[in-house]
Image 1 (cartoon, rainbow, N blue to C red):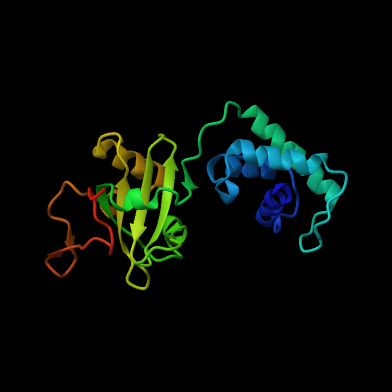
Image 2: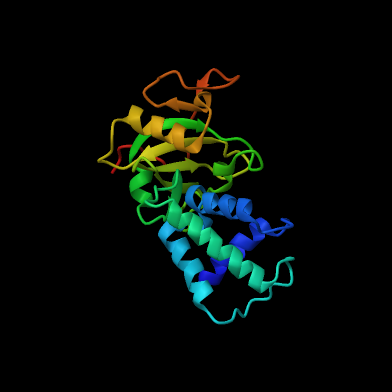
Length: 220
């Protein structure tokens, strides 16, 4: 995985003319706030350190403009920036696996969430079709910087823009978890309607929005 992380970093700087200190700071910030492959900061740091410890790399770097000596020097400066930022905080959000998927489908309904198109909504773009789900649901299970763990669940496309936010007990009060979700996803407040509000209507129809198929809160 260590060269996978390096390749991910190089994709982010392939159009940069110079790998100066400003770029090193930008990439260090990305590692801290928008982790590659949903790895922890510790895992990303270790991957870069392992790559630097290798005498030679077998990956072809010709697709990007920077030579290996320049890249190695740049990565060392990225690690220096990360060292200077210790102790590291959790990223705003990080995707977990689907190990507890059935528990989330039958967990606590926190809110209804309006998704935008994939090109406009980075979190929507992270939803994946859940392997083996009989209803073809899409979802992502997130750990927020606050420590809360939630699942964002949506029906299959093309009609899957009405999502729900779910949690598994025990969890903090719903209002606090929703507030953390808003903070760490930077979603606009009007896109997230707490389930406690009875009047969550599908716009233009006068009818409540249905739950995604197979989602049965409190059925566990």
